[in-house]
Image (cartoon, rainbow, N blue to C red; front, side, top):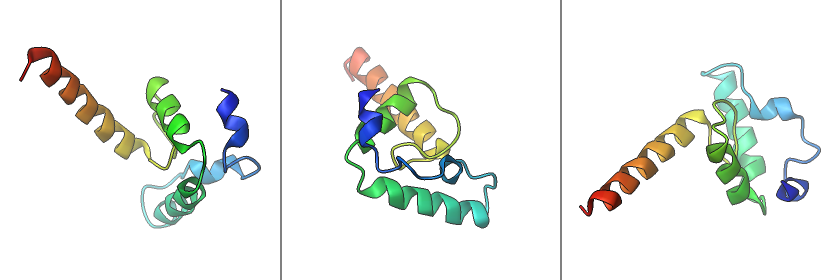
Length: 86
């Protein structure tokens, strides 16, 4: 995980990326975390790592757990379609 040394979140309080609420304050916290991720030079590596390791909480690579789950489902469907030749 050499890439992590170059992350925009280095030095940022890690709790920012793990909102405790799904509403209001949590929404604001997720938005602030995403802003940190926006210009990150290793955003794609971070997201890939979160997907590969099954991170079930927090903001990784600019996506929260719900967005990552949806992305995983889309990728799985695409793989299934590709394997069946559809």
